[in-house]
Image (cartoon, rainbow, N blue to C red; front, side, top):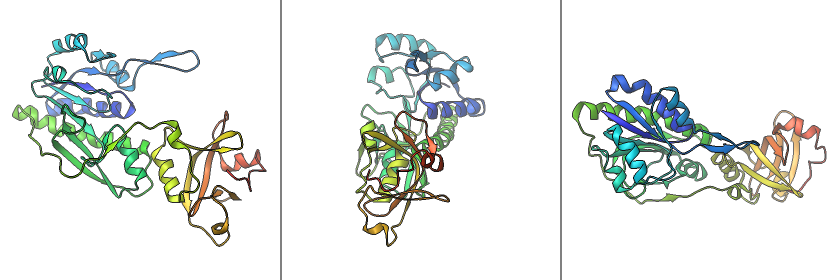
Length: 316
């Protein structure tokens, strides 16, 4: 059984690596890779391939980087003779003509407890809402976004310390094993399981922009902490310090004490050498340990305070 793997970012590359490790014992072959075109990066605008493309080329797998999934793309991919399309974080919707090339259809890895958090940012959504659990789900690819049957799923408990970055990489590992199990079964039986329809009320997520990361200090410390974790590594959270932006990179929520409870939200309260810089929130305090001034490198709170001795008492 031959598969076409579609994905682009680092997490999708991790899943691909595990699939390549499992392909012999599970009876499938990664026959080709579909990924986004190289993107310009850095001062010199060098074209940088996606992490998935890098892994594919290291393993001598044919790579396709179309701008659109059009007729030309189908003509290029079809000769591979792949039986199944496997997708994770590719970022394009597969139309009926494209899916028709695969006799076993397609499957998609989606890191949420479907039908909750359909769309492109399910992990940040779960962290923002401070959910107690989420899931890694493998679903059949449907013509409508994330509406396919659930083929395999693993529930994950959340403890309130996760970031989008580390939770996504965990989902990539778990998802690879779920997919490998499904492919092993499909290789043996000649078909995928039918799966079960999604049950419950569907919710949807959208694209996250830099402006979403602006801190509202009137929110509670727990809400701001959740926003920080949801937007780590990108786009991060920030506020204004006078005319310059200030990025908060690492912090933890703390409860109010008798003194801080009376202060206005956004007030920089105090500096504690053992702990960090304390900033008042609508309820509670944010203890900041790593931060970054506009145009500067990120630094720990002690180094930051060495160069910003007037920071305590500021109103952000």
